[in-house]
Length: 160
Image (cartoon, rainbow, N blue to C red; front, side):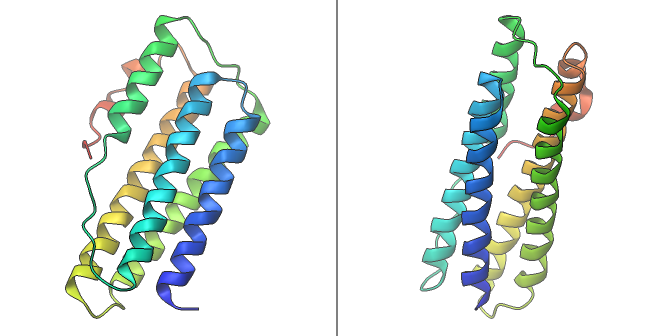
């Protein structure tokens, strides 16, 4: 299997995993966020599919600002998540998958021949890194809902 075929399968698996978490979580907001992440994996899949034949452009996304707004709405509506250990383990597994995806794209960017493909793989790696930090914030939010929004680390994340 070539780089793009393997990467496309990773993105499909990631989408399926995020949809599974969305179904299993008891929190509407977190479910929405998981579906947003699943949609991002679909977008990555489509970009990789196009990349096999050409060098598509990676459009900007607003996933971090969307997610932050969802967290703010949850807080305003007093929707306090319950820290379920199995739920937190699912988020940690998803975080691990994002880290592995980031490392994969960084590594494979050195193996492609076209500069445009290299650049695109590095951009996808950067998005995977942002997803990792997003999941970290979800874990913190679920574990410590009262202090999460004041976390300065979330505010330091770059916009897409």
